[in-house]
Length: 317
Image (cartoon, rainbow, N blue to C red; front, side):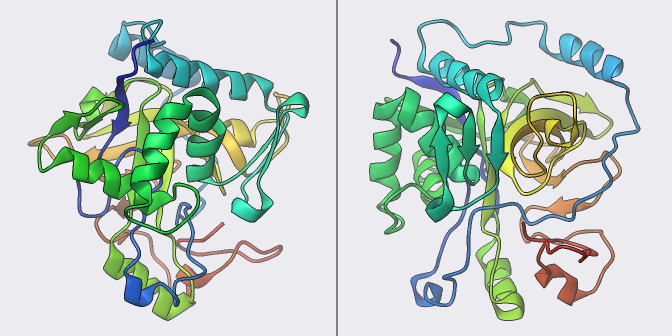
């Protein structure tokens, strides 16, 4: 097998964002205060609708954008990762977004419950590509003391590998910045700005650190943006999301699923600078500091998804 995981890692080399695992950096002096931080999306759950295009439109646009094999080349590590991801999606019967202490992996019964970095790291890489996982875990420990790779470990390892270049690689990973180079099976990591994280700790006593996704389609240009179908474990779904349908074998509002997201890019190098979570006209989240064009009060940023409670802006799962 070719051990070089071509295009596995897709880094948004932006102050706050990186494509590749969940992103998160903890300043040691704030570590105690940030004990309740985690790897998840900080997002307002928008309307379950993408009214700009039909499913048929998506199919036509995806074929036009790709016109290539959807699966990576046989015999490569990228193919092994992709096939493991496809297996999980086909075997999935029960899923939920939970963190490390509550994780569940029961393949015989199709149970997969974990957060974003755990899904990519332990449920996919550790099971299918243990040498890649060990390389990631060993290097992540240089950036955090966790027993398993966490967001900021993913991000800082891959970002260091870039070494201020547009793309770079080692024996296991290929890291790059441009959204236009995304292929199905590439890992996408979002890392939020540390100053923003600290401000959320001060306001809310907890903070989102970032998010991790895997691309499930080639990027499709839509106006000044690009949209991509992604697979992730999250607290809420995207547009046209499997977590919101009753026509599969899984009835879950959170956890692992597939859906559609939009990214705005820098015109010069095509690095993403913001995303829209679940609608082409939805909230635009600037990835540098998580500022948004959504309207709401600051205290709404601190809300939890509790029964009977509605968040006006960004909401933690």
